[in-house]
Image (cartoon, rainbow, N blue to C red; front, top):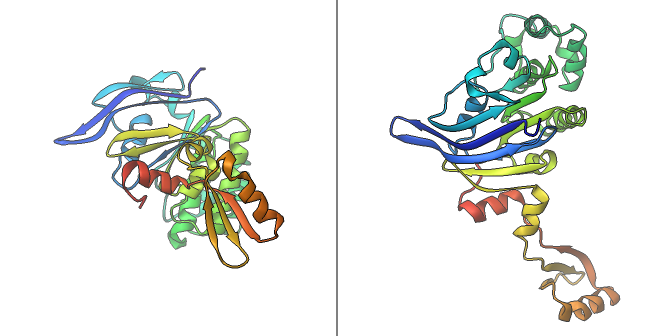
Length: 282
């Protein structure tokens, strides 16, 4: 399989509003691919089309060598996992009861429940009724639900939006472990630190169109001025261009013991997104 996901000139129109405008991209098997953008940029619409919840207005969509006409089949659904704004739980049942039901639905072994509760850091909440859980805990149960059958491809729409930093880090480690075992992950987020940590490649989506695509490292290099930022022990802050004629100046500063900190100019993904689109990621 050459591509886990291949999208060609995808377009989605709602009445008079164009949500997606001729976007094209491909996701490799075993890749963590991030679709980044602010609220209303088209991220959720894209993920709903890729999972068969919405139909496209135009363009071609292929997921796991399956075209959009077959997204509704049980065979296709068994190969993917989804965490989206439409994901839900049985509020009156316990966490364990919910996951048992999903194991039966996906024909997954019951011992997967222990594995998933550990991965989402909810072992102690196993017998709690879902309605009594916090928003962040419910989000982690939904993530366990999406992963319980070990799908080939996982779609995660803002998966850590309700989580505290500790649980977010725990979830990130679990996703990276899953990916190392071969699972492809498609994630939407407006958290640039999350995208930098997790994603092999990212696409900037703004007003329904992709405006930049590449690895976080390549994008940060592309938009860097490559200047050196130097702070001295006297509190002076210097910006020295990365040019051969400035080598002696930098060497002299280091040799004199004046340098408190030195780093190259590497913008964050958030700064790059603002430069490319003129918009903050909120």
